[in-house]
Structures are given as structure tokens and as C-alpha cells.
Length: 215
Image 1 (tube, rainbow, N blue to C red):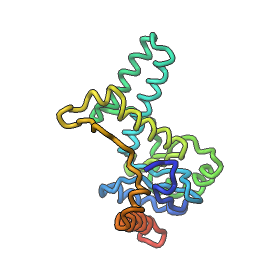
Image 2: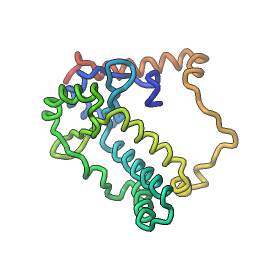
Image 3: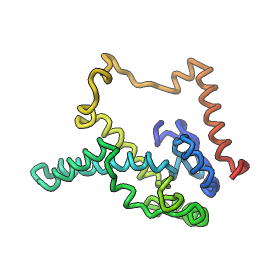
């Protein structure tokens, strides 16, 4: 999925955000695919499973530390901060500072705040993330599109970084001799059944988030 390609994901209407309880139950059940929201096909904000946000946030912290170190490679403090960020990205079992920066709303508080949040998203003034969860524990995070793009790109860069690839077991993760990009649209044009399944998956996800469904 490309966050800048509306054809690769389904965008839900903003009013679906008010059904935060349903989204939390989906995440809790293991369906942790992010939800895209917008007035049109292009996402303007994303509702992300908190565990996924933590993973993306670790990668972004590493990428920013990497950029800072690239600018000042002889700075010992930046080197230490970079190494710490890399360790946190590499070892997800270690406590992360990412959730500590989140102010967590209850589902009821979030639902009440939806109109204001949507106005800010449409105006482009929502710069920070908004976490929601029960008992003060983040379960989902609302992320502005621009920040979500940065998070996803950082995660992609982390996955091909020397630090991450060096941690992989070479007996299991062997590079392909010839690797070519996978073009989903081209594949679906040649395999109608694949397109049918893909459209059905998108329709089912729309139905799950439909305002006419159960809260």
C-alpha cells in the first residue's frame, strides 16, 4: 500500500471516526489494518493501531537521529542518541518512549472531540497525533496524513538500513538474485479473480466501518 496512492486503500468518511468503539474492537480482535479518512479518495488522516504507531515512531526517531548524525558525524552526543534510537527500533521488547509522549483520550472524550478534530484536519492545522484508549492505555492513534507519510517512509528506510539487515538471520533471509517491483494493478488486469478478491476485501472493510453498522 502507498499512502500517496488513493487507489491502494479505501478512504472512509470523517463521520465514521465517531464510531471509535468499533475501531478499537477491530484492533483488539487482531484486525490492525489502519483506517484512512478524508473528504475524497485522498487520505487526510489515519487511525492507526497503537502497537503499529509505536513501531513506526521508533523508526522515525531512528531516521531523525540518523539525519542529525549525518549533518554532524563527529558529535558524540548525536552518535549516542543515534545508537540508542537504533537499539529501540531493533528491539521492540524494550520500553519505548513513543507512548510516553501521547495524551490519551477515553473513547467518550474522543467521540465528543471528533467535530473539532475533523475541522482541524480539513484546515490542515492538526499537527499532533491524538491517542484514544481505555484506562489511559493508548489503543489507537489519529495521525495527520503528512506525519503518517513521514512515519511510513521512515519505517521503509529502517527496513533496508544496514543496522536492520545485519540483524537478520542470513540462513533465513536470503536476497533474491533478481528482484522486480510488484505491480498490483498490472497483476489484477491479467488476473480478474485477483481483482474480484481485492474489491471484495475493500468492500468488506467499508461495510465494517459503515455508519449503518453496529456501534
